[in-house]
Length: 271
Length: 271
Image (cartoon, rainbow over all chains, first blue to last red; front, top):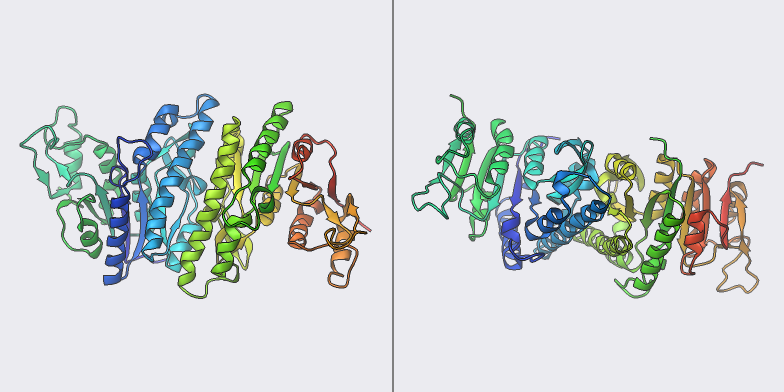
C-alpha cells in the first residue's frame, strides 16, 4: 500500500493523564484534542494513526511489578496483565472521545500483534492495522506491556511504536504531543537561561546526546532522550518530525494541518 | 510448539451476561467460573485458552449498526468500534475475575491479530498468543467485531475462534459452556419429550442437521447450529468436544479435570 498523506500522532501520557495522580485521565485535554483532530480532518482529509502513552495509568503498575525489567517470578504475571488492563482503560477513554466527535477511531492492542526481542519490536503483524487504515479508520494504539522473546515480557513505549509505524506506513509526518514546548538547551524548569530549539538536525542531536551527563547543550530529562533516540530513525528517512506542546490549545490542530507551531522540528542533515 | 495438555474453554455470552439486559454482566457466574478454573488448575496443571462470547455486550450494538452484514456506510464505522469497545469492557471483567483468583489471565484482542475473508478467519497471527501460552499465561479472547477483506468488517464468533485455536494448538479438549444442559432431540423449552443427547458422532450430527427445518431429531435453536458447525471440524480431527451447562456449578470444574459431566460429547465417527 502507498501510504502518502498519512500522519502519525503521538499523545504523551503526561498530556492525557495527570502524571502524579494514579489512574487519573485529563478528560478536558482528551476531549479538546479529539475536537482539534476532528477539526483538522474537516479542514483537509488525511490518514491518521494515533499512539498514546501510559502516564499515570500504565507506569505505576508497571513499576510496582518491575515489568520493564522482564519476567523473573510468576507473581509478575498478574502485574503484567494489570498494566495492560490499565492501558486498555485509558485507551477506551481516548477512543470514546474520538467517537463522540464522529471520528472512526478503532482500538488496536499492541500486545496482541507485536512481540519484542530484548525490548525492540521483533514480530510485528500489520494486517489488521493496514486494513483498518485502508478502510478509513483511525487506529488508536498505545504504549503497552508486551511479550518479549528474550525477557519474557517488557514495556514497549509509544515512541517506539510511533517510529516503527511511521516507517512501515511511509508516513509524511510524525507529530509528538508532549507537556513541554519542545527540546531545550537545558532543563527549563531549573535553568532560566534554557532556550528552546526550534529546529535541530539529526547529526547535531546525536553529537549533543553523546555528551549527555556533562552536557549543558540539550535537555534530555523526563524521558525526552528515549523519545529522541526513537524519532531519529524515521527522521533520517526523511519523515518530518515535530515535537510540540499538546497541553496548549491549537498546537495539535495546526501541526496536523501542516501549519507552523511552536516546537522542535527534527530535520535530516548531513555534515 | 507441541501443545499437548491444552484445553480450549468457551464461555457463552448467555452464561456470563444477562442476555436480555443490555451491558449487564452476570458477575456471580463470572466469579464462580473463575474459582472453578482456579481449583481445577490447582488439582492438576494444564494449559488453557479461554474464549468468551458477547451476550448482552456485543450483540445489541452490533445489531443496531448491522455490523454482521458488512461495511455499507460510514456511520457503521462508529458502531463497529463501539461493538469492539463493549467486548473489551466485558473481557476486562472476565480477566479481572481470573486475576483476582491468582490466575495469570491475559487479554488478547482478536480484531488486532485476525482479519477475516467473507466471515472466515483468513489472516491469523499467532506469535503473541503462542508466546503467552508458552510463558504460562492464560490468554482470554472473545467474539469480536473484526475487519474483513471482502465485507470491510464483520462479527467473528467466539465459536469460530475456539475451533480455530484448538486446531492450531492441537488442543486435547474443547469445553463449551452454554446455558442449557447440552444438545436435545427437540427444543426442551417447547417440547416435553425433548431428550438430551449425551454423545453424538459427527456423521450423525451432519445427517441430522441436513434435515433442519422439518427435522424433529435435533434442536438447533438459539445459535446452537452455528456452534455445532464450527465444532465439527476440530472434533473430526480427534479433539474431544464437550458441551455442558456452565450456569450449573461444578460442570466446568469437572470438565476441566476430565471428569464426566452432564452434557453432549461430539465424537469422531465414520459410517
